Image: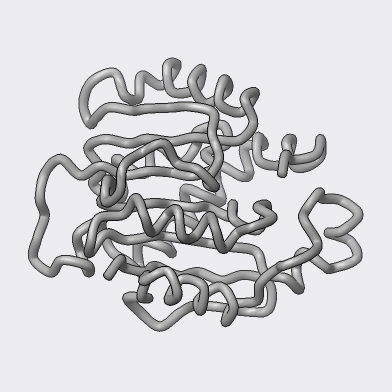
Length: 213
């Protein structure tokens, strides 16, 4: 589902980038470590290839290189305008034009990722899947493209947040088939994605890093 005007401004605001850099990414890294840190103990193989689903304007992409040790990053967003913004941002910052790595960027959907099975060492979703109507299918598609032992880093908004009266007025979320923390983790497990640490879940949000079996 596309973001409405308010949500588009929100994800493009500098505060969103600050939140991602100084809170969201460090928290996921504490929970799951670098790409090979927990899924494959002692293995720091070069050439790690990762994917970000719903990349927005691309603020998270440089962090995948600097904080998680990625060497190649693919990323996509459902909104073509966001993809254009991400491309411009990354060109301006000269990210993906040499060290630390390369970037593939396209318009797409988590419901159908145009990559073969077991393609990525890690997949990242920074508060994205709650926008997807059939989010369970998105989880299965993420699991499909992960290598065995590869990790899925996810921060998601829960049903109680989405159904909050103020949030319902301000934001454009699907209302049916939403998940709580337990439901989200159960869907991960059903897709052979096993949490690698105690799940951090609260009333409104869940943070979880899981490994592909």
